[in-house]
Amino acid sequence: MNKISKLLKGSSLLLRKPYLINLVLEDNEVNRNTVVQQYGFENGLPKIDITALTEKKEYTIEPYTFLEGGSLPTDYMLLKIMAEKISDCSFFEIGTWRGESAANVAQIAKEVFTLNLSVEEMRKKNWDEQYIKLHGFFSKEIKNIHHLEGDSLTYNFSALQKKFDVIFIDGDHHYASVKKDTESCFALRKNEKSIIIWHDYGASTETTRWEVLRGILDGLPKEEHKHLYSVSNSLCAVYYPYPVNSYFPEYPQTPKNNFSVKINFNK
Image (cartoon, rainbow, N blue to C red):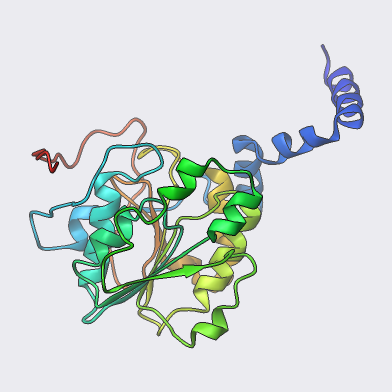
């Protein structure tokens, strides 16, 4: 089939089923091409070595469930590393889920604020009751964790009257949501040394989720892009306004780091 025939067939299909345009717009290669045309970054963000961010050799990640929707142990380790960098850290996150990230960071940060849809909002989306019930499972009884309810796309952040040292964005990962959350959270920084972390920038620890990167780039002032990095051995991107060495790894990567994993059963 030649290109003209494909175009005509595709146009006809979109006219009959316009909802398919979302699949086209969300396609990873389409988003990659958009990023490259607008900003460059043809290899994604430059990478910083997670081990270069800390002098410590050991972190305990607890709680950790290995269940769906959670993060990698190295993602939680990154949050703890960043929270350690700032004395009396004030931490904010979008997306509570079971509360694993909040519970881990609360061991280090002075205070943790976590924003999630309310039970009523989740029910309006016809989400399963068991899924709704599990939100905040690990975090809701921890004293220095404050649970906020609302949609990050419409939430009145000014009512918080608060700014934050470290911010973790782990809500809806579609372009429009990432862009809006990025804009909102950039305004929530306490100062020019505040750090922002995005989860699921990586489709894996070695590949880029281009829709998320496009949302990050469009949501930040262009002059701030110089502080954007991906973090090795994780799914995260960071806004990190500190001097740091970075690189673009080969694919597939030759391992630079390896880790020891000891698993305890906490029943």
